[in-house]
Image (cartoon, rainbow over all chains, first blue to last red; front, side, top):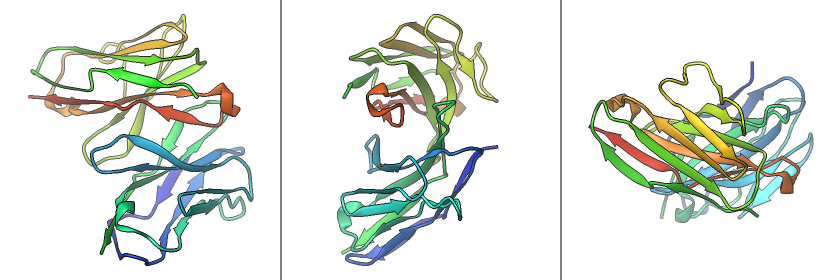
Amino acid sequence: GNSVTQMEGPVTLSEEAFLTINCTYTATGYPSLFWYVQYPGEGLQLLLKATKADDKGSNKGFEATYRKETTSFHLEKGSVQVSDSAVYFCALMRRSQGNLIFGKGTKLSVKP
Amino acid sequence: SAVISQKPSRDICQRGTSLTIQCQVDSQVTMMFWYRQQPGQSLTLIATANQGSEATYESGFVIDKFPISRPNLTFSTLTVSNMSPEDSSIYLCTFLSGDRGFNEQFFGPGTRLTVL
């Protein structure tokens, strides 16, 4: 079946530290991959996406590269800010079905 | 891109009652979905809302508990029936956008439900 596994949190970093949140997936075919972010008390927002192998999604300083050979889509940011504190969800979508399958989420706390 | 809204944004309900959540998109969309996010958890798909036919439910979710309507291409409702405290969650609707090659889903703001 289709599934998404992401590193468990919480992750606590100091401001300006480098961030990596690991995400791996299991799927048949070629899914699209997403990172969503949920800030405290807010709804789910799309952070970035990649629709095919070797695509790199990027937004707000965050990046993730679709790696088919390792079935991974790790989220990275070179220098985190306090405002990046949120829960991050990795997700996949099989185009034939259209729905999203989410990982369990990783809570990130950035300290000043 | 289309805008999606949900009503109510939050509610506190008594055990045994039912609540209907409305989801409105400001343009016609092909696929709409309903998800649940239990406290501190990830999102789980409840069902795909099909226009003009019965919804397609995921394992663990049944029509008697979560009846869904989709009368047209811009609107859907989810009813949470005979509620218990375990139904306390955020319920979210989403749609799949043809504008982005069916490669992007947009989430509504969600309905935060508390069952006492």
